[in-house]
Image: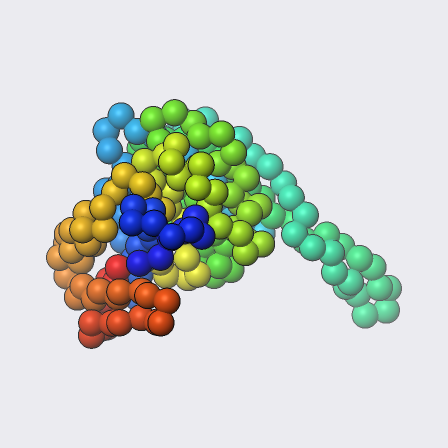
Length: 215
């Protein structure tokens, strides 16, 4: 396992949980399983698709969850065959906090950007709102790592990885606990559990099967 903070250590680690099927259900189970009673899930999610953003806001409003929204410019590009012009490509962000499983499930079911566009979604689990957690949506897409001070102030920080996984950074959760959680999810979903040990020299994999869950 690797350190998400970019430093060596025995306790800061990252775990990877991936699946070829049931992405939304598996990721929802993982986020909720690492959110103890008394802790809140601070989430930061986004999409370049206006209709997804609108649908997510409507769902949160229906559920009764408060949220904050922002718009950011991703890049500018030139369009048009005869009348060339530059337009901005925008990203639509939503920030909030919850203890409600329905909210987390709605995020993974409503968006395709966390796997279709590899946008990193952030779930920060903590008793109190950690300072600077919203900034992770700026840091991670640019190749940055989760700051160590943010890890230490949280129970754990989870971010979506590419199209089919979640990274977990924590100073409070032992690797064995992650494996036990993954094992429960795999059994519940009737999947095969495969384990990967990550070292500087590469990965040592136990055999994978279709519909696998891996840590």
